[in-house]
Image 1 (spheres, rainbow, N blue to C red):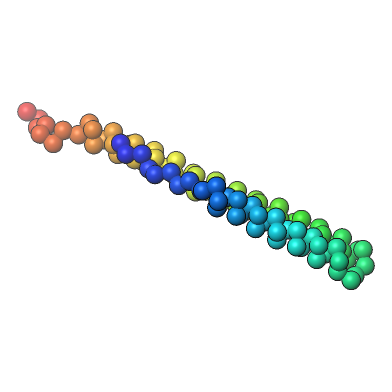
Image 2 (image 1 turned 90 degrees about the vertical axis):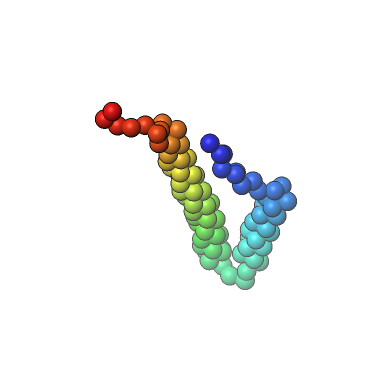
Length: 96
């Protein structure tokens, strides 16, 4: 049985994603902090930003979990097919 190729992210890709997230979050925090509005509006925008960030993490987790579940299902199906093929004898004659 051939093992499926596992996709691995490089360290550079992971670092780029983390730095990009940090820069975007930092820019939003600085933008909200220096916005010329009252504290209630600033607090509302900060809570909104927090909600967007947590929702993004949740969505990423759901997508990852769905992909992993699909990989497990395909592995089980592949194992069943391999078992059937290994047990099948094309030269066996039934009823003789």
